[in-house]
Length: 235
Length: 387
Image (cartoon, rainbow over all chains, first blue to last red; front, side, top):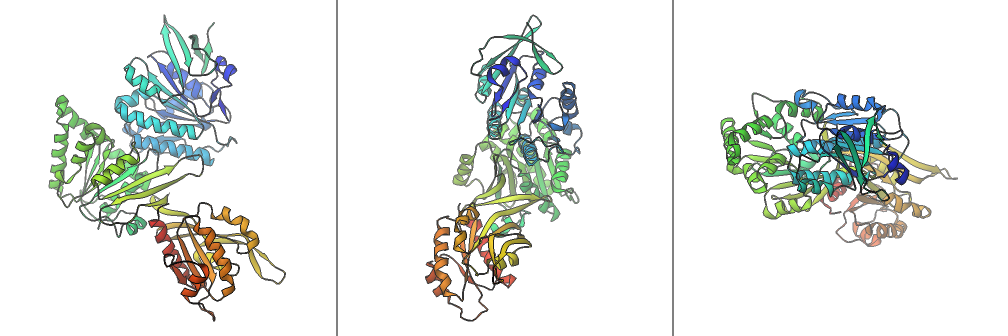
């Protein structure tokens, strides 16, 4: 089975990467580089594809972010829940699909299925990666925004379906949730859908992360920075 | 009757949706089923019916742009025959209602007013957000005859995150006159979408499930596999080639110049609003090991026999025994009716060992109409069958 490299040596050296079908919650406070951390985990490596569900940034901004970290944009697709509200006539392409706003879970689900279909059919990009099933990284940026638009119970059911689908296609899901903006019940409910949790904290302007739920990795905090789209451990 | 805008489905429903009905299109997350509601809306608007479209999840402009993208052409709105309540209205209603919780009354009042002022005949409601805002009972009440008249047809699309239980409860409580569930088999392969007519109040027909394709902005019911099998020289290759628009046969010429199918016949046809793929098996017993592979996942089988050849019936009996184990609809086509020595239907039934429950057609595979009669019967059985 395929393993998704995290780019973090402490994880990849011990485990060989995240197992296909892993759903990972990135739990972080505001201003903690969580988004950059998520981009580092979501960036497609050679042979892989990435789908980003963006509830905060336009598709063009998402691509810019990936490009700055050296990712190959031909293998990145974006489901954009921002642009269509101001530009209703914007049309879907293979790599950019649009829903009116983050409330439209029907649209989000359909666009996700379409994109996965295109990836599996080999029509997503002119370049074919050659691996089957094609490895797909999927990032929800962010669950916090979705929770602002939809009730927890509804979103829980929706994410339950999405995470199960991701498991079926042997993908790797990354879900960002603001740890300060929601109560314990919300966080623990979303955690139930996940196989791995990476928690981030900020102490005296330094950022730390710890990994929970991966066999062989203890839950110690690691100081980190982000450099050119890579998570770099500070000694 | 109101057309669903999907003609194969209209036929399955006995002509369409009776006026004044309540209809639920239930979408499983991720399934490409938005065109069901859009097709019905499009058809109603094209026919000049007065419609109210409730879209609390989006704006009118974005909704109309989505229709263009899905359907390939804009909604043909004529003389203000379509009115909307959209996400902007939802925000206004929520703001006006404040925390007092009277938003449902505000919705009700607005729906009533729009229905009365515009003499609305059909309401199209996207239920997802209404359900979240008001819960199931209250939400359904908003989209019920209490907000309009008894003659108003109400068509609802809902993202069903609760699965079959919700639909079963709707069916038990008779909350709707028609419930169509639209679902998808997700990866790993095979991947296809299908719809199930879960319940209709105006007929006692059995639950039906049919795969569908989205082609040129339309829903096309799809039968991915019908197999035509039978003894050698019963006319299977001819049947497949005469039934289909595109077809090939993998044949081999024997020492005497006669040809026999050595792999399979394959053909495709679009008929009665269905896309259908036909597979023909080789008839020679030496190819029997291939039969399970060709028959695998078939939705129906045509057993073809030569109606002038009594000696074939034993082989046909053996094949019939094999296919009855698959638990799929079967039709028997007795070919070569135009040749001398024709057996009677009773002789054929007795020879194959089938009762009256399996239809037998006396046909000539050279006649396209005969071939199509067989397919019509089988497609009808397939759409009624519980798989």
